[in-house]
Length: 511
Image 1 (cartoon, one colour):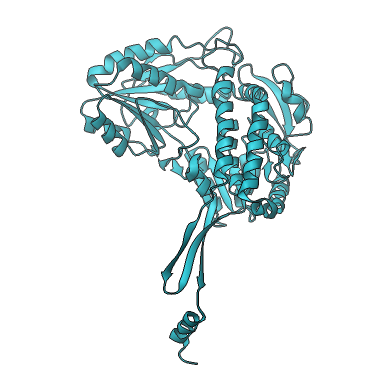
Image 2: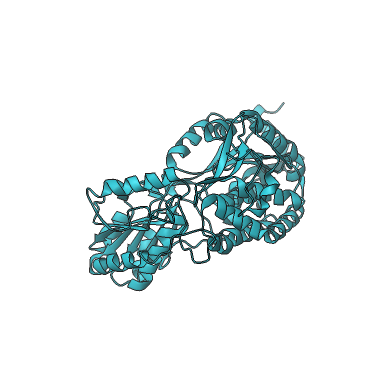
């Protein structure tokens, strides 16, 4: 391993910023105190690019203490002051866009064109959105609802928020968790995945450089077992926001319940992609390939189950396989690369095991293997299309989190929609049809937090993202997310002394 705090400079020119460590507490980078080190590995090459000391429970305590100390001043700032700070934050991020894009590509294996055109611009847009939202923290107007008493509702910040982000979109997940929390006046401690801390740390440094006070945004980089569980269970943390697998989400909920925290969970997905027989076949094929392979399939909203009405089924399978075979795997920093590696060799092996087991009960149409010479050192896996699996099979029901699309036929509309709903998950879905009535029915009946029509995967800052069923609860992005990070207070006061005496007399009699 590289010496902790010594980043590899070749593809990461901003790496020198991390020489002081991978914890960001009270506006300063520091080293973790666990006594154990971890490496950020470039999944395209298998090379270690940055080593750092992991956080211990004591580092979590220090970060929570910093956030708690910063809370009175930040929550007491006017909405306009918080908005101005977030606008400056967006400008700093825009100035550092290339550093952010390169760091995200390096630690995740994402093609640089994806981080430049999607991850980083989306993060900057999200920051600008919440800069505006900060000025719209609204309660309810005053009114007389009970005799001579006036009532109104206040929305107030909750306190210290403890958030845990995954490795698949580390920059965007940091933004989705930090921005609505601090726009509403809270302070935050974020634990990024230990595989991918670099852009979260850059994000926090940009917040400080934009004038957001020390302690408002803190980062602790440690394991889920040590740092994550301690953060969720911390008595001074008032709310927990977690994005990750459903299995780990259950553990987070169990720990948070002990201290009766506000809880926000964005968990797994197994998005259906429903193609009716009147759909534009070419559009659906291109949508399926893009929707299934975005971020090498490591996306909880990725298209994973394509249900195609029988008249289009054979043509859809044939054309989707042909299009997948044109996708170019390669170096994430090369201009011609369409698809990078998975996050790690362990994740690649997990995906391959799903496909290998499926060979016993389904047909692997294309892919189903790691590429050979030239990419063998990276965690690459070919785009894979699996057909003719049973609805109750593992590859249809379980979240794979890789570049694998499963295709099944259906006959009537009732069957197609029933199959779409037939998993524990409900994060996202899409319906492909030229019929407005079919589209309307699909958007009503598919049980998911987002249903696209004739598209799959786009998101925007103004609209909410979050799931149904085992995909969790709570929303990211949008004004709905902003409200998640507030608590509601009813204020009521007596307009007249007479009313107060009458109420006293009703309870205690004439004394």
